[in-house]
Length: 295
Length: 323
Image 1: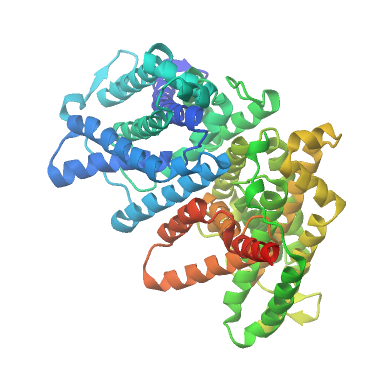
Image 2 (image 1 turned 180 degrees about the vertical axis):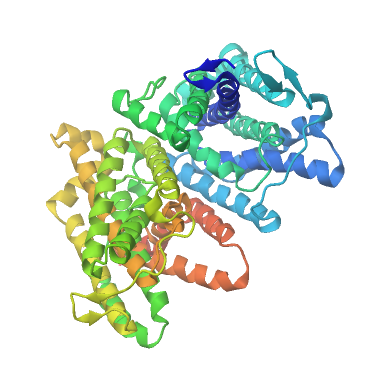
């Protein structure tokens, strides 16, 4: 059997794949946080709850209405996005002229309520969500066995991440967004409907979380607590990357996922901690974050 | 970064009102164990001190820490371990817990003060989650079981803490000393500098204050006092568990402070009493506590940012100005 650093190559690549999958979710979620923060100056604590909501909508569509994975892949983000739009209109839009910390506190409360409701009705145990038939099974790559669904998640997350990046960096709508991030009043004076832009941005960010949720459903179990454990790690990812750049959020997400996977190979006890340790080191060496612009 | 402080909510406090409330409050607390279940009162006092310690940081320095559970729960573990495993007397155990929390505060503060505002909140949250994972894995915390059956012992060798009234008045004394310490810190020249950092950090820097050192000092003091509350709680309830180091606990202390009134002396005490009372009521009703907590959070942030005491002060000030 081939060995790398004294570890069987199969186990090594397996953990690396797990790291890549985790990294895909870190990237998608930190991307959504960065998009929302860029324009709204709100740290969306409810991001984890919205991710859980996406997974649960998929689960409920399947078990209650018999609607499968592929339609759910569209319906779940759409529903979560609409929910986000309602939240922004009813509540967040009233907080823009206050301290940004209030946005964090409000979305924290929102996250507690959403999670509390699902915990009340579904308990804390996980519910399995079957891999869609088209992607079940796996492919033997010669050097390792790749479950098809996991391969799909990596591809899908790359498409989502770079699609969002292109939307913001390369389109006209994206240029409005970036301009409004720099100077919302001036952009409004030019006749762009900035409040609408804010609403849509929060909707888009929420939808991204919902999409990550439905993608995650067949891999992790669908449970009310799946989001809150993840979101804190994603916060650390965001601190490491700095929220100034969309691309930075994506790259940092994948990097830290892989770092976690590698740690699991060499020193499993620390795999929970490694993202936080990297965060602490980055704070010492480069407090603004790897890709951050603001001090 | 002046827009990252919570200046608008910090209501100015009319002195006479505060003193009247404090006098009535102390009298009520002295008489309370004859009317109310002492365990409930002691829980309230521990959380009230925890919230006051947290408010020293949020209300008077303008730093929102999302990781204060580390100090509260960490100190509870240290105290419980020292008293149960090493057989230390309760006062030594509590001192050790407080010192341990101060040390944790020094480490967390050292990293967190490198960023401001929202990043500060996220860093403290991440580091406290790291401490949570440490507590899950470290052998001395005994994982999911926690440290159970901690003896209350005899305070200073003569006061038996197993007698309900003895331990109640001990907890009340610790609470009063803790709150007095916070009041002294806030109203000292040091406290004035903390407030100036809250109001306008850049101006404080340009006046020549080493803002980073002041922030770190405030962070350590707040951590130590939060630890004192946690250490006493471990002696009262005779256990230390993972619940006290979770991020939910960090959120709870924020809620207590926000509900009562950020930047007021009595606000966090009232907020803590209400939250603890509410949780006790809900515990028997079957209505999930997290939903209630979350709803109060949302309502407070949307319509009630000054908190209960802050609102009262604002009304009184308004009337005083009119009259």
